[in-house]
Length: 175
Image (cartoon, rainbow, N blue to C red; front, side):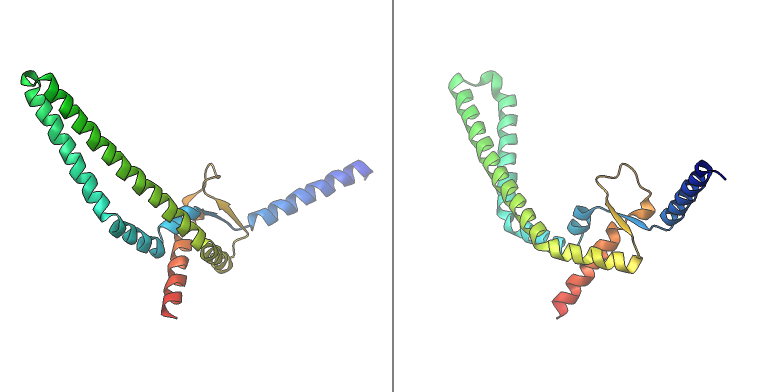
């Protein structure tokens, strides 16, 4: 055999060996945010948020109903209303809309802050849960579900990570 043939055979064996190793590689795909926000800890935070903003939600519902009532009145009485009454009604509607928008912005901002706090507080727990799942499942590679254009559902370990987060939270609360 000449040098070229030996080199080709060597490269072929190397590619074959890489293929054999790659076939044994265990890959998992994780949607970390979904794992976190499906966890029991996230449900506790969600319940707290609902309680914290119950008054704002009730006020927003009340304002929406008032706006709908004004709109209905306007549609029914528009033909017989004076310009002054129309202006007053429009001013009332604008005031209600501004109040509603302020409530929505305040709730949205508080929700974003609470989500950021939750994510920051759960980073170590998420890392530990992923490490546990990787060790238990013998995974060699974990990919981010958001960056994988396609993956078979069997590769998704998100539910396993959520279960591990719940398991770790339950263990921590019992200690």
